[in-house]
Image (cartoon, rainbow, N blue to C red):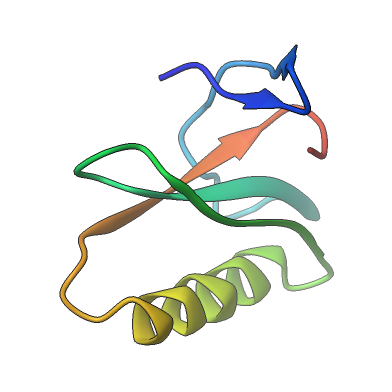
Length: 74
């Protein structure tokens, strides 16, 4: 799934790695690919990304969402 931000193409997604010091990620709706959130988590990076994922999930009840990791921030 390729993404754009302000008309510019963004790098392709990679699987989220639990041991990373810093994770750049985006959260999408599964059904239509809508970008629901994005960010950079550092320190306990996977924990921070997961907390954001759960927050987005609460904001969009009933929608299936996914999180993907990127090489750089959006």
